[in-house]
Amino acid sequence: MRTENLAVMFTDIEGFTARTSRQTHQENALMLRRHDALLMPVVRAFGGRHVKSIGDAWLVVFRSPTSSILCGMAIQDRLWDYNRRVTGDEQIRVRVAVNLGEVRVTRTLGATDVLGEPVNIAARVEGEAQAGEVLFTEAVHLAMNKAEVPAQEVGYRQLKGVPEPIRLYRAAPGPVALTPTNSAAAAPEAVEQPPFGNHALSRVKGLGAADPREILRQAPAAPDLPDLADLAGRLGRAGAEALPGLAGRLGRVGATLPALAGRLGQAGAALPRRGRLLAAAVAGLLALAAVAWAVVPSRPERLIEAGRFEEARQAIGALAEKRGSDDAEVLYLEGRLSEERWHRGQGGPREAFQLYGRALAAGSGAAAGALERAAESKDCGTRRLAARALADSHSPKARSALRTLASAEPEEPEAQDALEKVKRIFGGGGRCGAGDLARDALRALEEER
Image (cartoon, rainbow, N blue to C red; front, side, top):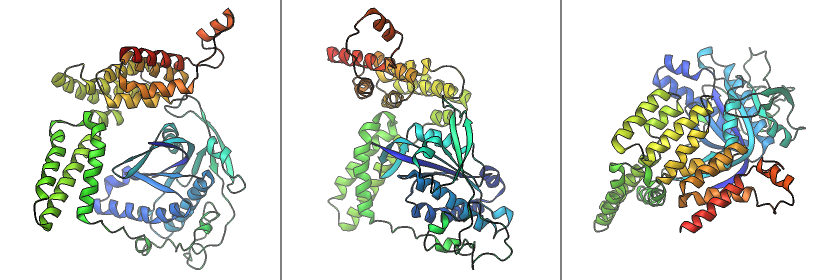
């Protein structure tokens, strides 16, 4: 895992859920294929990296904040050109939102993901955007080249789960620039202008008109599949690397899969080449199945993320009946439920952190990850609660997060007078106190060795 300062873009299709409920599976799949074929060349042209798709939503990252907004403008103009050529049921209208900040970049089985507060804020900003709009935060506005991107201030918005109001801007409409999409290839009946005047789209070279009959043919071909044996080998190696850190998430069946994969691989070594290929493929797929067993969210987690709290509570209760109320996963899930309720304005954070601390003490790696993320929060209260939970766990797994807290708030020299001591007790001088709690906890862990 590494950290990078990136512009994070979210896009999604307006009215997607309603459309999918009235369209056939084939129609939905075709809509998404056209969406991807329209957007992907534009994203690549501006240096964007498509991280993942979540249904109709895209998560894309850019190193340049200016390029991220130009890309959003080009996407909207590209879709405008497409939409004027099709009927209402075939039109695709998207919202675009961008935020900037330091994110954690992870890789699992070769797939990249980005995590952190900037990602969460970008997702919340997308909820404020309208179809056809490019909305972005003040962080982007401060860092981008304002001569390149005309902008209009929207104002401050209180976003769900974000403590302070966020100042938002939108990309402003611009004069029309001539491109193949609005010149000779343009539909003759069109009289409107693209929303951003092709200010950004005109920079994309080799992009044909957004003709619905041709758009899928213009899409880049999918890469060739690797050799089966090579694929199986890479899957097996990735599974072997990933499983130790995820063992706590494996169920009884999942835990047997890596060993079975290994035995198949050993037996296959004595077979002819064709047999070795088959054994390697099966071994690799079993290793992948074990990893998938570990990383796919459990049913309680899916219910929590969906906001179905009562069902989640019942599912956690059923698990507690089987494993006991002090089981590491049960405690983690209870903490996860409490945290999500807090983020949605239902209760406070203290219970969640206490549960995470107990889960960590019981050996939960997921709780360690949750507390490590909290240790990186910009909110003083969150960091203090994380420090307290980490300290109370007395777990060696807490060391990494405790060191993060300690280094973020270095130790101060001894107070010179009584007034200074009082200020420190009550958090004066701009200090939070999480660093001191973390240092005390680290010393205690050393003594317990």
